[in-house]
Image 1 (cartoon, rainbow, N blue to C red):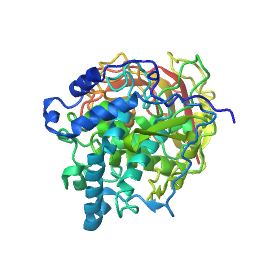
Image 2 (cartoon, rainbow, N blue to C red; image 1 turned 60 degrees about the vertical axis):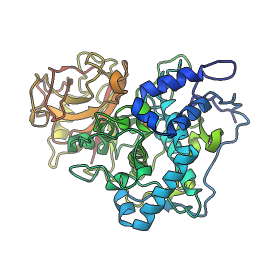
Image 3 (cartoon, rainbow, N blue to C red; image 1 turned 180 degrees about the vertical axis):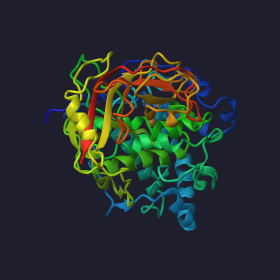
Length: 479
Ligand SMILES: [Cu+2]
């Protein structure tokens, strides 16, 4: 079988390259937790786990044997953090297991792995590889969580333990699960910081993605042929995923590079993984191409392990599942694709292929379920520290409450790399449920011109909007 080489590896670090571990250690220290962290013995493990990133052997993809599944007897459900907390025996065992993997260094290895995949950081100097900037986001994080969960399960008597998930899509207001304050082993190395819960609208940006058929509208598009521009980040990286990270203005979770040093990160990502699991159920549909990609993870004591993307599609093969799936809201059965336009880098905005026909569709009673797909747009003209954006059908000034503004469609959150802010050239995609919002809010019937404006914590526009220029805009219509 012909398989592509290791796009998942922390290239270009490999044989023959010398890196100063002293420098790495110093930068990691500066990058992450500052002097307070020096008080913790775990710091040594951080340094060791970073060194491990430099030991990745050259991989022969034709002979590499990936882990294809779990060796456990039967898959078990991952509990919600609330359910895990309500079972004191379970919570105690989880806490002890986390303590064990922190002492052994497995936790630090996972944290360093994550940092090393955040593109051009001190954990991975010289690389621009960022697992959050393309479609490997979901499978890669599934693999990371699996190895951590496997380590927890391998602590004595704990094979039935599974990572709890933080079900942030249901609660309002969203709160940090008390489980993660219940014992020292579930605390981050540096203080977690105050949590500012995202709004319902920020979470809705993730829920709107469920019920789309094409993986590109959910997790992103496969990498292109060599030399071509890579695809933008998958829509699932925005919405609730980014909004929860950004809910911590300080502390490890606020910066992708340090986020995995907080045990809460794994509960957050278990929920992102649960979104993927839920998407597959509505309807069952896997990515059809790009499965021949390999990811590596450093297991216990820096032992490299490999997983093929194709093997990560079914979580039950890795010993777990989610009992409660997330329902698309509102449900969108029988979605079929409707072309809006195939214009490229639309500066004038897409013109409906057949405006009359589309408007006729809008006017049926009940109105059809409509989802607007906006593929590949940039927000680089806004300051890199702005992380929350509203999308509108008309220009909007600063100081407007987005959700009550006539012409508001939805919003998206961007990922933060701490003081650096967003990635300079981040490209986004999103899917917004616009049922009942079109065409009433269109200034020019038959023509869709989108605007984007940064939002404050309270959902108010902080700057006037700019024209949203996307590579592609499509409409999904459900019956
Ligand atoms: Cu991540």
